[in-house]
Image (tube, rainbow, N blue to C red; front, side, top):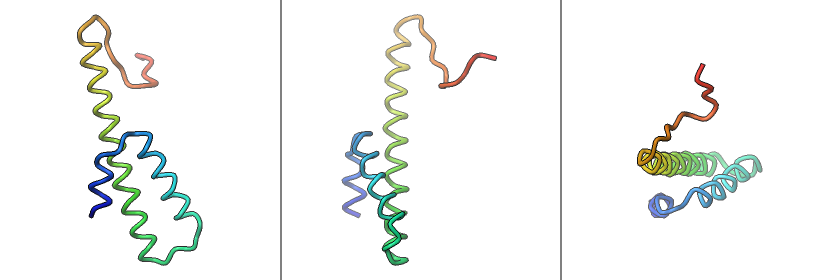
Length: 80
């Protein structure tokens, strides 16, 4: 559980770096089943942390833009 607690302190770039490491381990094909499950579990936790960091960043941007006349829209939203 110590790893999960440390993961909660990571920034987005660190999360991506660790996720890449997990993917490399899983793709390497040298892990036993229990090790694969542990790596997968770590990867899921990291992905969730990354999503939380992105959500926080989005809220900050919306707050900053809310002070002006700008509106936010999801990426790729062409309004039609």
